[in-house]
Image (tube, rainbow, N blue to C red; front, side, top):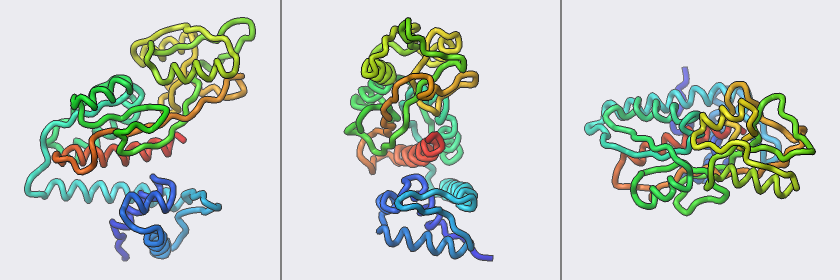
Amino acid sequence: MQTLDLAIMRTLLAVVESGSFAGAARRIGRSESAVSLQLKRLEEQVGTALFLRTGKQMTLTSSGTTLVGYARRLLELNDEALSATSQGSIDGTVTLGVPHDIAETWLPAVMAGFRRSHPAANLKVVESRSAILLSRLADDQIDLAVVFSATKPESALWSAALPMVWIGRNDFALKNNEPLRLAAFDPPCFFRAAAIASLDGADIDWSIGHASSTLPDLWSAVNLGLGIAVRTPAAVPAGLAVLDGACGLPDLPPLIVSLCGRAAGSKRPIIDRLRAILEDCLSVSIHAAT
């Protein structure tokens, strides 16, 4: 029985999460040719193709998808074993800021992975809007922050694009004789601003049908038909739907999801460990959402 190389497993995940050999090479600090060679050897070892290559596009085969799942489990076990047997366990408190959408969708997986790997550490979570989180990060009130923005923040350690979508009830219909009602947070709100800009650009009259201060309240308003909302496809509650162009709604620009913090190599190892877990989780979640 052959043995899988954990270093090549990390390379495989780097390719999947970054979407290219070039991105994987930057992430693991190797050349593109070295990344390509590692994957070629891995395909030879497992006896099947892991990717379908069409020009610059790379798509996982069914075997590739299966192996990626095992790769994550193997690397998680490896990291847990090293953490459990190390002389000094990593402890202390680290504060993470996240938007409401992240808190209700991707955060539980991050917290579970972090606490499983570092049981002696304490993860404190602050939920707020992206602009407020960036301000708190600049004031050293939080250690890391996941934020939504139109452009990449200066403090970004990792970034990726994520689409924005219109979300409403299944029976939504755009009416020509009355303004489109929006359900949105009070300003400043990135999603509200994007919705208004898109509607203005399409010359569609609008009004604020419901102003919310919390995400559950926003979804309740949308569910009651008080307005439609703009969020990410990762945060669509049961009973609501993504409204496509057939509804007469204008296209929305993508947003940038960024993990922000101070420069890599902080003096607190616990921050670096949380950052690594966040990058992996965000990469997987965004890939699944798009």
